Image (spheres, rainbow, N blue to C red):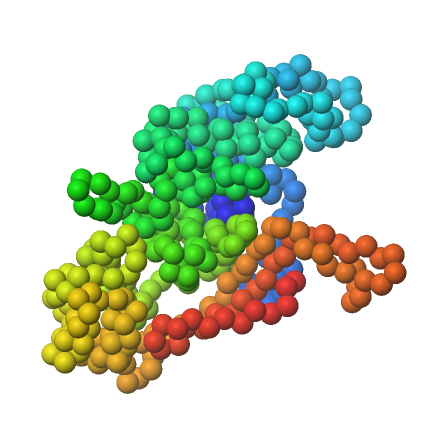
Length: 400
């Protein structure tokens, strides 16, 4: 969904080729500041949405294949199925054929799996367009996952991972592991969301994201201090983020790419946080040694009073949250973030949150009697305000 939004909102449809990681090849789709989420901004034809889906799938698979190849997994039981002289749509015909398919093991799937390799984006686009009804079927998600894994190469997938013995899809509900999410976003099946590698000592290290991504990733787990999402995933090329919640994934996006432009406060915070993270050997825990702390304040030209330094270092390690509070009270002239004008961190912008899991919405104001609720995804507009101090506030209106 995140990649589809990228092509619907920011990419010219006239371009038949896809150039991932090339921002200059994309143009901004002009949109109006419409207060209604359900307005013309999000009115796309079925054909345009299908083409955006095909282009998204092609980009992801070539990303996994290092821009050299895309491997397409399909089912050989559909080889002899002709769409001519049949009643019903392609989706209905394929659903009928798949109705008799039983896959209870990997060997069962291997018997019916067909694999094609494309070395050009144009050929992949053509084949995926023809195969789109298959990917929209009940087997579609599994086939696309297999396509991504084969495009990356199974040996490379295992080499990317920190612990190859763990399953990529977890039982019993078939949730994707973080390796799968990272594979589809970055092209590498690494297990972590921080930037680069983290040295654990003794010659051991764990791997995170190593390059800028087209669409990003945020997670509820970071707010609970279970992980630290790095800048590569937080600051993608386009203002679109996959959001990991307790049970499923949603998408957060903006219509204006300028929302990612850092103001003075954010730029300073990024500089200091990058220096802090470079000294953080805790596995993303958000604390550093006293020696590392002195290196941070030296690199970032922070002139802390000696009593503040002594207080922060009193426990033998420095926690980011405590350091951040000290910086907020330290004047800008001393390398801190306190600004008497109150304008350094001011920012107001709009975001949209899309939840693809259908919610029950009554057809009307109430659902009495035999009235059946309508099942539909939910799109919500958020007005976000970031006042001085970097504390983010948002207004969640009624979903449209």
